[in-house]
Structures are given as C-alpha cells and as structure tokens.
Length: 225
Length: 225
DNA sequence: GTCTATATAGGGATAGAC
DNA sequence: GTCTATCCCTATATAGAC
Image (tube, rainbow over all chains, first blue to last red; front, side, top):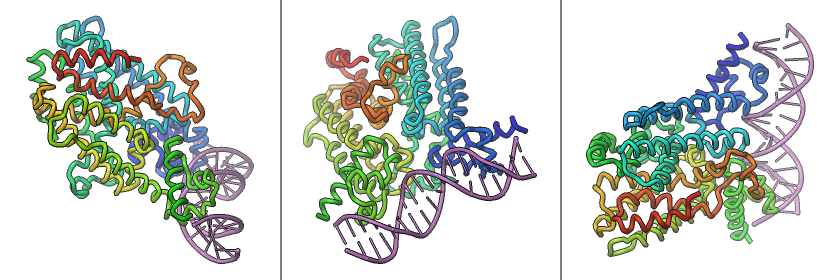
C-alpha cells in the first residue's frame, strides 16, 4: 500500500493545487481530502515543498516531451498546431505552477533553475520551429524578427492562463460571468486553451504568406470573444 | 500625527510589498519596519487587505492617467512610446500587484472587478491607438489584426515584469546571474522596463511601413540580450 | 494615537504507539 | 505504514491602559 499512498498524495495534491492555488492548500487539507493523518503524509514526504518538487519533476518531463520537434525534416504549420496543443495541455494539467509562478519559484532555488532551463529549451524550440518555417518558405522574417517574435511567443504562452483568468470578466457588470461553478477561484477553463493557441498563432500570422495568413485569420474569427 | 502615520503605513507597505512580495509581508513586519506597534497599525487600517485596497486605489488612479490618449488628433509613434513609458513606470511602482496577480485578485472580489475594468479600459486605449495609427497611415492592418494584436499587447505588457523575472537566468549556470543584490526575491530590475517596451513595440512592428519597421528593428537591436 | 498584552486560529512538522 | 497527540511558531486581530 506504500507506493499507492505516495502516489495518491501526489495526485490529490496536484488536483487541489490546480483547483485552489498552491498557497491556499495546506498539508492538513491534503491529508483530510485523502482521509489519512497528517503524520502519515509526513511519512511519505519531508514537507509540502517536497510534494511540489515531485510534481514539478513530472511536469518537467511532460513539458520536455511536448517540446520535441519533428525529426529530420522541416516543420510545417500543422506541426506548430500540434506542438502548441501539447504544450498548452501540459500547462493546463500543471496550471497551479503558472498561477503563482513567481511566488513558487522564489521559494525554491532548484525549481527556479529548472524552470529557467525549461524556458531556455522552449526558446530554442520556438526559434528552431520559426527558423524551419522560414527555411521552408512558410513564413518570411529576418532572424531578428524571429528572435523577437519567439520571445513573445514564449511570454504569451507562459502567461496565457493567467491572462485568461483575469480577462474572464469582460462586461462592466460583476455578475455577468460570475456564474462560474464551485470554487470561487476564477481559474481559467479548458476551452480557453484553444483561444490561447490562436492568440499565439496570431503572433506569427503577420509573417505568413498571404494565402496562409488569410486562412489563419479566417480560422481565428471563430475565436473572437 | 495621525494623517502622517496612516500615510507612512501606506508608503512602507508598498515598498515592502514590492521588495518581498505581498504574501510574504505581514502586518507585524510592516509595524516593525515603521517602529510602531501592531495595535497602532490596526487603529489605522481594519486589516491587511484594507491596506492593499488603499494602495490599489492609488494604482488605479495612476494607471488611468497613464492610459489617457492625445486629445483631438491622431496618435503617432512618439505618442506610443510615451504612453508605454507611463504605463510601464506605473506597473513598476506597483509591481507587487503583478507579481502575485491571480492570488491577490482571487482573495478580493472588489479588486478583481476593478482590475478587470482597468484591463477593459486599457484594451480600449490600445485599440484606439492602433486604430488611430492605421487611420494616420502609420501602420497597415485589418481591424481583426488590430484586435488580436491589441490583446497581445495587453498580455505582454501585463506580464512583462513576471516574464522578465523568470527569464533573468539565461545561462546554464545557476551562478551566472545570481549575483543580484540583497533580497533573494529575483524581482526584475528597472532596466528591464525599457526592454519590455521594445518587446511590446515589436508586436506592432510587422504592421509598420517599411521605413519605420526598419527603424524600429534597428533601435531594438540595442536591446537584444 | 499609540502602546502593551493577549486571544484566537491555523499551519508545519515531529514523537511514539500501534 | 499509519495513527494520535502534540509542539512550536507565526499571523491576524482585539481589549484596554496611557
């Protein structure tokens, strides 16, 4: 039963972090939810930070998978869509991390270093993809434009969920969108992911050839709020 | 001395929030720093949240000022630079808010509503400016492109400081940039602001006419990392 | 207005029995 | 492995004297 409990702790912790935000979830809450004692929890993990670290390790593995590029050929737009989906779904599954990114990273040097490395690898991936698209003639951009656009792709992707959460309330009335379910945490919803992907694609739209640019803008129409 | 103490509490709180992050600053810390008793602090403010609300109100006033558009004429690129400077400086002065944005807003409905409204106003301002640039012939973009680009301008601006903080560590070595001063909070530094402004400008660069586009890209060169 | 003292609560974490 | 019991510490907030 040991292995199973440790695993359950990780699963439930992740779910609770995502639902309520990591700073708002205590070890007691986790133990409660699992119907185990706090002491038992501390048998499996030194402390709460240790739980976060274990979850983060899985996140890193998952994200590295998502960042893999098509091998041995130049990328096309389809590849970009697919990769963005993988990345956004990974971010979604570990959204607690993005919700309180600075706070979480500032309390843990190791996490901070690892996250910085992930960003570096992501930056490489983006640059490679954009460079590949340019080489394949799908987009037309200077290397400086690619660099700057890549950085913006990284930023928009990283903070899309937060932006989406804060931007959820569009109308003037507070009531308009407050009819969200359960946990008054105003977390973004899964449907926001697709919109985020379009928002990223629109960053590179200006560099597309006319035909693709028009096509993309047409697709994006459907996701106007 | 009453007025002065209340004012000093607000000033010191803001400084400490910015330096250490709002969640890491307690009412006791603030009282300590001011050399007053915790009881005294609670004479002036009902609770910590109340302090945050007062500071937020000033932030909102300041940001509204920064969002004002040139009156009675079409905007030009100079106006955009100026406005971005005002906005980024406002964000800098109240950076604690952006550091833990979701966490802070999720604990206070009023703040959340107000921040959403500020974003709405900012969105209008951005759309107006971009529309004005288009009308003046400075940029060339469809209204859909303006809308999408405007949203990205908002996002990049809102989260630039966070991105900058997390991205500060570029090299592989953890030591490389860890020689930052004092408070191991990895807050961004003021010089990052200028870079953020360029990063935003590069969002609209693709829509500029060739001459200005080249000019902007040349300027931006200086801010490559 | 300001202080001292204190109430209350909750979270992190450990010891030791089972 | 798991539980019970508990300790320590810190944060918020209040009461009442000065």
